[in-house]
Image (tube, rainbow, N blue to C red; front, top):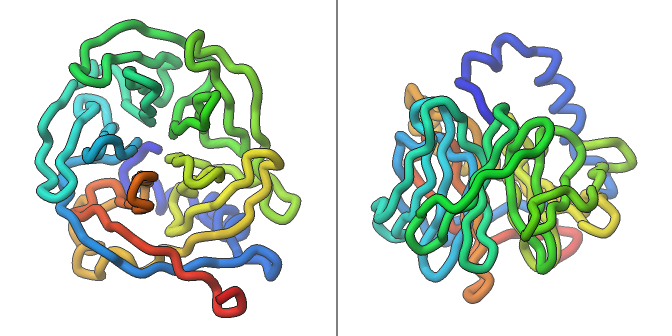
Length: 263
């Protein structure tokens, strides 16, 4: 999601609610991070979805009139392939499944299936409500919609087959945004925060927070168009974790640092 930064000033109640929701209770560990590498990122990309495959980042961007899906060189940040979506839609999350790429939109209740190699359009599908972030496990596509529920979709029919209800210390955790499947857990950006939730897909419980405060420099945060943290990609072959944000100048490869008590 979804909006320009001006909305933040108009929603103090939402900000307070989010702060309470992501406050770190004693029994949920909070991981910090180390930066391993820094790569360039298009400052014009309002990042909605991100995944890594075969040496490339695949990224979706939002905003009506600027929504696209892209294949991006990691080291250079160069866009090597791009498909622009209709100006009428606001692009959201993307996910790969076999030789296809699936993308969703924010409020138009429609998604698209593309050929992963060529970005050629294959078919359209519909779903109720909003589309936010996407990832997959070994059987299902997983879709967030801004609520505390992650939907499971059949990869063939793209119809909902189940749901994961996410809680933190027994309370529903909403504002789940971009998703990534990492070592059997779901990582989820929490919109308008600098935190990622690590979620047990079997129970829906948040098992840990990842606090990425300070990742973007003060100078970069002062940039006119910089927006929130959003975008998680995992390279399973080399065990590399990448994060970025909307209109951010960089993609960061990070290593998680466990709380002192767990080291």
